[in-house]
Amino acid sequence: MFGEVPGLPYLPELPARGVGADMIGRTAALLVDLPVEVQPSGWRLTDRPGRDHQRAVDHLRRDLDGLEEVGHDYTGPLKLQVCGPWTLAASLELRHGDKALSDPGAVRDLTDSLAQGVADHCAEVRRRLPGVSEIVLQLDEPGLPGVLAGTVPTASGFGRLAAVEEWRVEESLRLFDRPLVHCCARAVPFALLRRAGVRGISLDASLLGRRDEDAVGECVEAGLTLLLGVVPGRDTRLPDVGVVAKPALELWRRLGFAPERLAGQVVLTPACGLAGASPAYARAALAACRKAAQVLKEDPSGEG
Image (cartoon, rainbow, N blue to C red; front, side):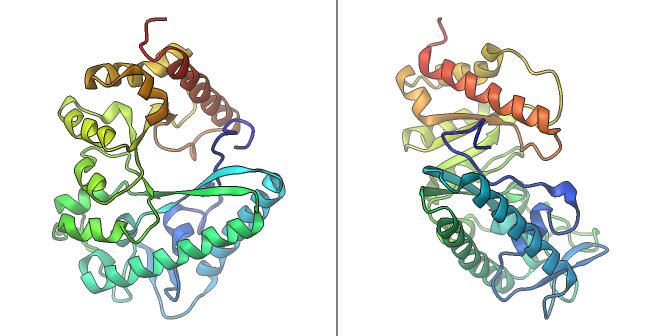
């Protein structure tokens, strides 16, 4: 991370290690006064911390130890990512088996607990890495479009949970300090996220439709950063730098913004994380994004 993304390194997630290293368990380990356990159906809130909860806490602690060892003398911004409150609520079950998303009171408690846990997590990272100038928080919300559309299945799988009002989502996101929101699904709620005051939106560029471009343009006009996923997250043959940069160049041209704004508001990333990639591919994918970003800076019109 520090070698290939020197301008904005981040704490990686390694879910293949098993229970507690996955996105839901890892974020649940940050919750304040809301312990969790694993059931056959997935993660569930419970009365007291047990082995599963401790395993998730231990994974995160070891990762922070590694971050401190590698980045002890680093100065600059650092990115941390956690599962967002709505994807978490759509995944965690309550003690009696229903999903937390089915209970507005439980969602409020979960969101408040997560906001406090994330604040504590950021504070610990700052203590460990005193040279960090800013923590950029990313909320991973792949489930948010389903939450808004009312397509999240009930715990039984036979029904669907009611759609959540947009104002509730906006209100919850304001509890976090100007986060980035990552949503690698279709139907990213651009207008909602802009109204919620997020600093940027991360998405899979291949899922961006022409119908989304007006909303994307409004986000750019409002000063948001776009993190465009332009290389696959799993091992494959990577295209050359020009091909990697092409989606951003073409989108910017269609939106009609000045070329010189491109490098300042667009960041090139893997499409949806690198958890399923080999270490060698992960390094190559990050290097490809960094080199393509240089193209955006040196030739934003795409005419070079």
